[in-house]
Amino acid sequence: MKVFQLYEKMLVACGSEPSGLHALKEIIKYIKEDGKPIIVLSVVPFYEEFYEGDLYLFTSKEDILEKFYKPFKEALEKAKEIGDQEKVIVKTVLEEGDPFIKIVDTALSENCDLIVLGRKKELGLMGKLLGANVARTIGQSPIDILVIPEGSNLSFNKILVPIDGSIYSEIALKKACKIAQTFSSELFILSVVDIPVEISAEYPDLRERVYSKAKNILEGAQKLAENLCKKVETDIREGDPAEKILSFIKEKGIETVVIGSHGKTGMKRLLMGSVAEKVLTFASIPVLVSKSLEFRAI
Image (tube, rainbow, N blue to C red):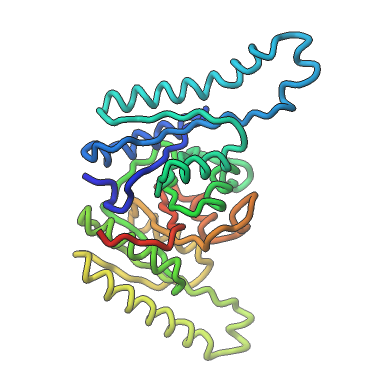
């Protein structure tokens, strides 16, 4: 079964954390029959200044290099073993530098159209912050990224796609429809209206206009989806978009989210407070971030 029937070639990033190997195992379930190789990259976040100076008084440069490289080499060895067990060709690549830069650069140089990232199950740190490398990779990547939290299952029985009327959510919807068509999934399309109380009080008719616009967007989305999918459900919620998406996920038992992201968003992170970042941070299920505006209607 072709992976989602959307992507030709993918790169899976595997570092020293087990989440990368978990993501690899989950994605391999869907590419066993393709017969295509999968690129597995491990990036050593290692810079010259880390092993200059006084460290050499106690050990050699080679020993320091070996210590830093060991967990990343072991991750690639395990990835090879997983590929051999599942009869999938795994091409391993070891790089050194800024992980998010190397991940994006390697994916593009290998002509990949999907990057797969693992994510720690528990992010912690006072309300949780999305891992820096995950956020930066998503922020810089021009191609789609699938983020799979550690311990989660990649499954497509129930798929959610939030829409806001933008071209990014429109393309995300088309991709979600194709996935749903492939797996006979139940597709949920959600629109969230967020009207500040003070504005609503000052402009009483604004709420009605916003809801009317959201309904029109949903009607168009439903018409598109019903031409491709057997089961489609639409809904409108009011409030903070990320919070409503997350509560909808729990309420409906959503298994995978497909969400549009508005292009590149800066060198260091996604936009602070962005819907995509909040969903990626707090959702315990896989999230496919639609970055590319290209859509191959296979």
